[in-house]
Amino acid sequence: MPELSVLISVYNRNQLLTETLISLCQQTLPRTEFEVIIGDDGSSSDTLAVVRQFENQLELKYLYQTDLGFRAGTVRNLSAQVARGKYLVILDAGIVLSEDALQQHLTRQQMSTKPTTFLGNIYGFDRLNENRPVLDSLQISGHNVNQAIQKLQTLAICDARRPIFERYGTDLTTWRAPWLIFWVGHSSLPRQEFLDLGGFDESFNGWGYEDIDLGIRWFKADYDIQFAGEIGSVHLPHEKFKEQLAVNERVQYSCQRKQKLLDKHQLAEIQDWLTLETIEIDQHRTDKN
Image 1 (cartoon, rainbow, N blue to C red):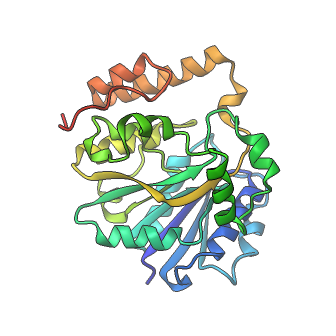
Image 2 (image 1 turned 135 degrees about the vertical axis):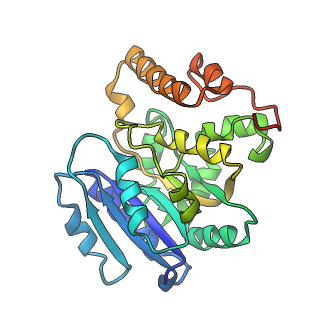
């Protein structure tokens, strides 16, 4: 029985999925300790053909749901329901992991005294592909992630959350609203607690904020959220939903999603966030309200 179930959501990004799977083949964690579940959100490309290329290297499952728009939360819920591991590692297609990433996730989960979500370090992750020219020039693949991370560290191309870490630190237990950076594109959490909370809210169709919603519920349940800076990964560049929108459309879309969160959770922190374009609300509080 595998200890970890790696859930990868994908939609028409076969090359990115390939690189993610290659990086999983490089893991120091024995293959018997993890399974990989590909959740296909209705791709028109032949994603299954990509999966079959790795059948002899990884323990794989492939799930497909009809294309009814962006439904990452739904396909991740389906994947979690068939998962056998005690812990889930959630990845976006195009996230390539450092060689010891799964081992580190498993070790941290096993050592945790309460349910904890560990947020991995995502080098190169940005808002609107500002880092793409450099990332493309480095020819990063699933084969060379450790070396790529070293180069990105030298170039100071880090996780997009770095500015807020520099202001408030990386000990999220002292933050007023750590769920603001609950981006699950590289994360791990215990499966049972995820299911007990109902998984992702599937009413969050369209891009984004279903992970923030889960983070709020995780926080309200008095579970821990931690940033695991030592668990490295790289975000390979690709076209982003936000790039398709004009500036005013991006602001309007974000406000609509934040309002949905506010209507659901009625938190003062969301009200503060609603007026901002960034995630930098004041985090200087230690109590959970």
